[in-house]
Image 1 (spheres, rainbow, N blue to C red):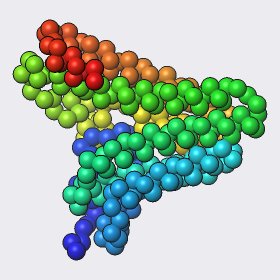
Image 2 (image 1 turned 180 degrees about the vertical axis):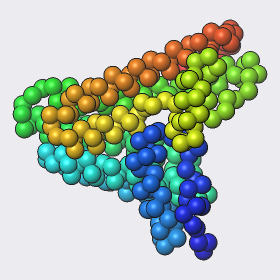
Image 3 (image 1 turned 90 degrees about the vertical axis):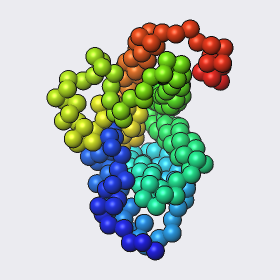
Amino acid sequence: MRTYSLDDVYETRKRRDSWWTVYFVDPVACRVALPVANRTHLTPNGLTTFSLVLGMVSAALFAANQLVAGACVFYLSFMIDCVDGKIARLKGTGTPFGLWLDYVGDRIRVVLCAGGLAYGQYSLTGDVRYVVLGAAVAVLDLFRYVNAPQMKRVRETVREERGLPEPEEGRLPRGRSLPKRLNRVLARRRVRSHLISGIEFHAAVFVVAPLAGAWALIPLAAGAGVLLLANEVFLVYRMWLFTRRHSVAPSQESRERILV
């Protein structure tokens, strides 16, 4: 069996990723991935399943009002979720089913942890705002992950019909990007230009706020939610500009592809 080096693991990192992952997760995940790759036969799907189990444990801890423990286990769950992708890319063992499992597992983890937080704080305080908080976190997360592939499908349909080239990874449309100097700085550090995404939202709600204490749950979750929603609105606006700039009457087949 081949022996991998830490440099090999570093090569599996995404070209650009969320700043939370780059600075707070990858440094740990890469070092965990190395012994996993060299000393175990764990598969990416097995790691994804383990990550989901940890997410369930985190939700149970939140429900029991063990906020610090729940936050630590949630971080561990997300870190293992990053390890599975590195192992898949390192060994070439990724599968289409694994992509589905990873996607669905993430959604289940977020919904369960949002419910756990809501239940734990409502049972302790009787404050209905925590129920609203849990529901809002779950709905916003689901909207984010339903909206993203749909926008991608619309862009791909327009590109196909107009014969447009695929954009470079991490590149924003011309005239709508961050200042070039800032974008270059972020790119050198592997940080993507969308600074507030689902990952930062999850980190704020399920790691930072619980570690800070119950008082921080509502304000931090609300603030992160507003920033995430603003980012989603901006992405939809960019998509609208893209379709307007390359406007073309869609065929019946194209409409069906977008809507299905």
